[in-house]
Length: 231
Image 1: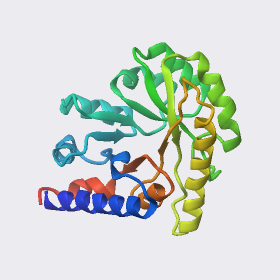
Image 2: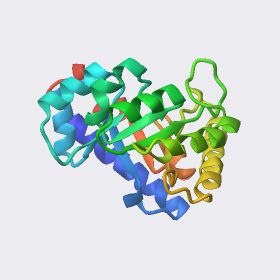
Image 3: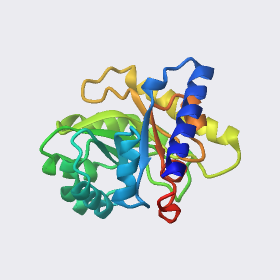
Image 4: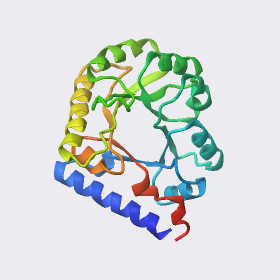
């Protein structure tokens, strides 16, 4: 799959350049290949290219990929909203959850998880009605309430920027989340170190890295589409 290889090399190059501009280490950036729209076969090709973090946003997609890709070195990320009743299906098969935004979900994780789950608290920085997540002013109290759940470790914050060509608007959203992350990590909470930032997708991951992202979630720009086939 020559096109897939080209995609990955292009992304690696852009990540390197963004880190050079901002004095960051490219090794501090985790690239999550979002494989929700491609087959397990194509996802396996991504893994062969050296990426060991895969992201799915639906329980069915996660479970089918995990059944077909038996690689113990993979990190599985659930990046979509998950209904409380679906928690039992996925929670013990993932390494990271990127969409913790309500206590009812936290309670279900506590009930169903057999290990400590690394969670990103989802924040709706842009305030768009179409996006899930807490408002910025709600995050501190929410994180404090999570102290009672020992199966949850708040490793960081997650957001999605508006889908727009306004790069300064995108940058301001990412910058606001980084500021909030800094404020939360300064508290040095053992159950919520909150040092990581999950932000940036195919159209804005370079800006996200410039603004401090540690985890970028890249779908089409990386994995391409199934219709590209075996090139």
